Image (cartoon, rainbow, N blue to C red; front, side, top):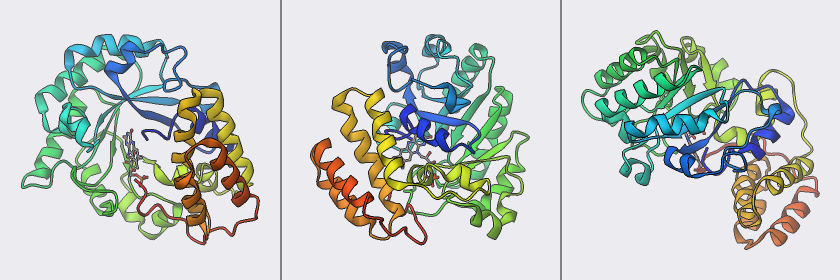
Length: 312
Ligand SMILES: Cc1cc2nc3c(=O)[nH]c(=O)nc-3n(C[C@H](O)[C@H](O)[C@H](O)COP(=O)(O)O)c2cc1C
């Protein structure tokens, strides 16, 4: 997740454990070619994170060999092509959910990626645009992915133009998973095991789950999901995150990374809006730290059901 799932955050998640693979933020392929990958905070990875899949934004097939050669230096556990992002500037560049629409370019990019990559290759998609024939288009893309040697598909069952406040259409997962022999990893609104217990039929054909926003709210979620209750020391977790970010990022970027995380973290508390307001009004790190520390050391009452509504 852009601005959120950098190595400092993944390090925090891996302090708790319980996860399978972790994903980077979407990294622009062109940017990778210009960056010093040995020192960049965006591409950094630590052994304790376990397998890390690097997610790429690519729009131009001819650029694939050079991008993959750069990425090879990092020895990724796998590479994911973003064909899901609905953000206007990403679509405008012909990447993300716009690439999903362009069959020829999509095939050329995936074929070139497969040629360059021996390890796992995945794609992240939405349902496409909500128009007549979306099902046929999606079935066609799933066939294309299999033909191009993709290993798994991460499916976020919202249409390409839908905001996150609309619920993910989990009920479509069985039908879509049965349309392909590729493993389907479901993404979207998977905030805890209760949902799977409530509607097991939606997830029966699914091979894996990808958790986004709720894992930022609760970096211990993966461990808790694997049936080990976690009683986090909220202040310690926040302070650890701050320390990790400061280790990785230049000073000018630290504040925004911490502010972004804290807006999510505030969802853990009954009066989390107090922490959120303090975060939003802070203009630099010192007041933010002071206010967050005061809130988190006051034994804040945990929210009964933390949620991600409105977080984007
Ligand atoms: C702030 C933010 C940044 C995101 N960045 C990415 C990204 O870089 N790559 C990606 O595939 N999805 C990205 N997403 C989408 C999530 O991966 C996920 O599909 C979506 O949030 C729904 O899942 P969730 O309910 O588990 O959060 C982002 C979402 C948010 C809110």
